[in-house]
Image (cartoon, rainbow, N blue to C red; front, side, top):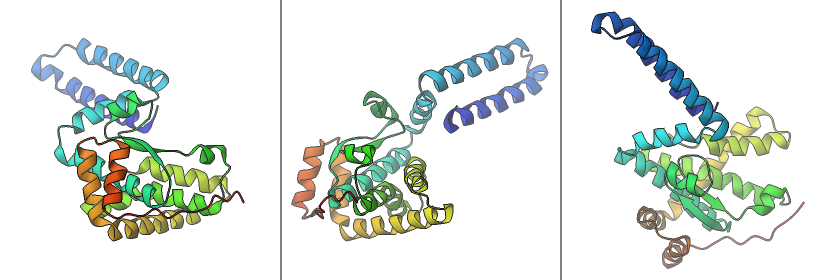
Length: 232
């Protein structure tokens, strides 16, 4: 089970245990907590094996969706990825702002920005372009820190950069340093293009297409930093 599903199970078990303790006081049948426990574990198992934990994510997204700040955090987080990817000349192919949208596009998580990263997946790009991906992955965290002074999201982004760096033989301390440095780089790019970032957030809030978002960035004077692919 993934972390989200396990957290939901832990919370549910706590509530059931609490209901068992209070059962005699409120005349609750012992069968109710037992059946509830069985159903929760069955659903959690199905979610883990058949839905890769996305069911738990959908549930949390449904609950969090009632909070405007929750939705805005996701929006600002993903806009950070989008803008920095555009600046660093990594083509954006799509974006989602909820777990349901992500599921429909066969993605995981609460939302995300997808890239034309076939070469990355095939391991055919060199260090210089890989550095750009580090900055893009950390851009969501950087955006949240700039807007909210902290970051709630970004666990998957950190896992991506950690996975790549560890596969290259980097130590844990080097991975953490690279994360911090990439966040700083992304923060600088966002600050230098802040009006464009705000315009992008407004456009993504209205679910503008990738092409429309790109045109807005062009109008804002944002330029992509072209870099020739190296395969060293």
